Length: 143
Figure 1 (tube, rainbow, N blue to C red):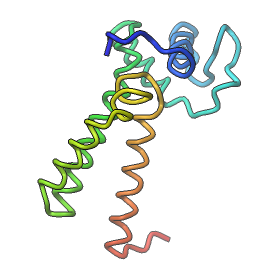
Figure 2: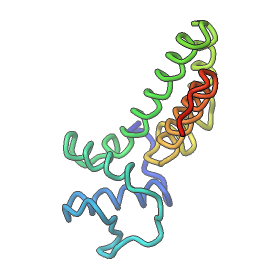
Figure 3: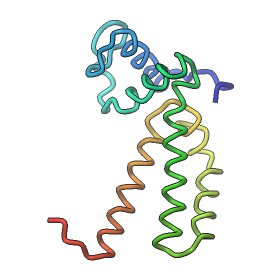
Figure 4: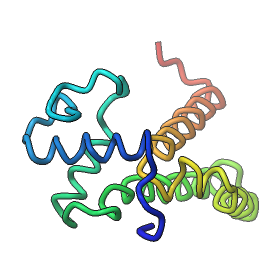
């Protein structure tokens, strides 16, 4: 994850937000160049995770990209668990995870090897979608 330099635009902007949040100790408002960041309107969960990794591992490319890798790992675990538990097919889960992990877009561009929001977004979307499938299949009345 440290072999590729920090990419311009989204990844570098999030890294600067995390760095300034770490230095200012202000966990509520992301800052960019000393001023509140009005360009990035996404929730700061990824930035918070990057700051936590920076506190543990020091401010580095690894600390900025580790939350994306953790989210991707959790996504693979969740997909394999879902396939084994609800679809009753280990091989389907394994093939699903292999296809996901070998997909160029998931691994490279805005994916698990960069410090972007996309891995975290994929994790939340898949967990939400499969939770909806579970509730729908069990006919659970949630309202």
